[in-house]
Length: 74
Image (cartoon, rainbow, N blue to C red; front, side, top):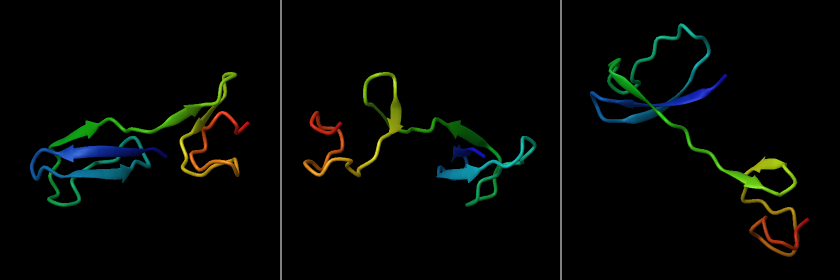
């Protein structure tokens, strides 16, 4: 079930909503208006090389660094 981000053109607020069905009627949770604009969602991906991808995370898999993406972490 995807989470979508919308911008309300009436009250100028941004909000996220979990869409459970295709027929879901969406309205602003702040002003109840339906004049909405769907926004692009942003997410981060880190490439470890070799074609594998993983989500960007602040936790490190290496005890030698805190960034999680240094060349000594394999």
